[in-house]
Image (cartoon, rainbow, N blue to C red; front, side):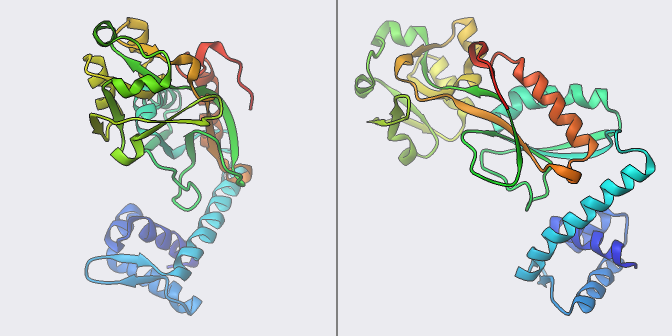
Length: 306
């Protein structure tokens, strides 16, 4: 096995944490993949994996080496595409990560349209409510809601969303509408997330005012919390895009709008430069255009800037 193939095998085994699965991904036999990694370790004079009967894990050296090898392979793929004249043709698999509900409501429908437009592209989407390190975990694109920390990644702002409080008309008809945040103490509150995280809700343009609430119910699912509020049981906190259809249909109503925190920006984040393959550039351009036209993201038509 040549050095380049050994590098590809190393990455596949690292990403799957399995020699068998890594070999299968490359169409190789497990013994062949094992020999390739052993040869690579012998040449480097360092162990890249720790192996047990149950799992394969990267060593510290292996983890650092993985990042460098990914850079090398991505640069080589870009050079090959340019040399073969395919540099402008989106092909290959895209790995994308986004928040769970945003992915369900917006990303999945838009991706199907994108994939129909580019038959040579496929997509693997991780919908999860945590920040994924797209460099270390091998993703092409991330959609992020909230302020971005400084990094070497390219970020394009595509919209913004609001953190809002909502309830059903039937609930407000019986219990009344809170006029100031302090009045939430006399209302039934539904919290999304761990109970300790839901005991203080922040209000004001900078989120400088914290109001202690005592949730009667705490759920881990945003959709479940909204459904409980939709049924008229209590007041729920959500992001504006998550309840857009309910507001339009009158199933939910907003309260305490004058006390809302500043809107949260929505960005597309990716690795720029030669590593931005045609498939990534095409998807970024497509999602940027479409999301900026989406009312649930571009709240009340507010103009967005990169």
